[in-house]
Image 1 (cartoon, rainbow, N blue to C red):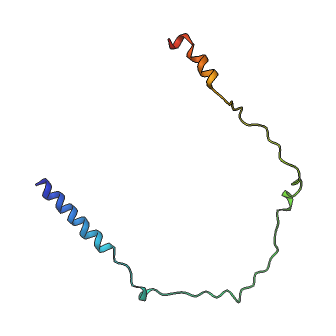
Image 2 (cartoon, rainbow, N blue to C red):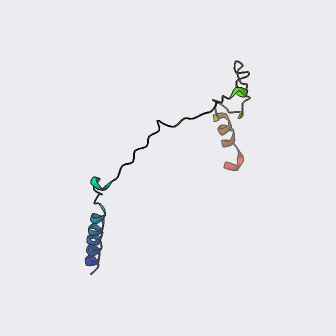
Image 3 (tube, helix red, strand yellow):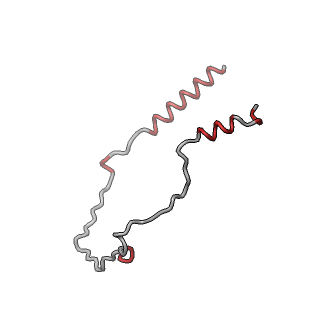
Length: 85
């Protein structure tokens, strides 16, 4: 009975998903054409002039993190602690 129910569910899934896969015909699709030739846009080009000053000087940043090259000495030190023995 359980196998029959599983087969019915699988068959229903195949039937229902197969009907969704049909695509719309290309003949029914209407196309729109937009003509931008007659449009005139008036305006000024704005540049970020306030940010241009001082560009020749390199930015100076301090190190945000103090990264160590090796953690092995610290690991060896903690391995010798009495708590771990």
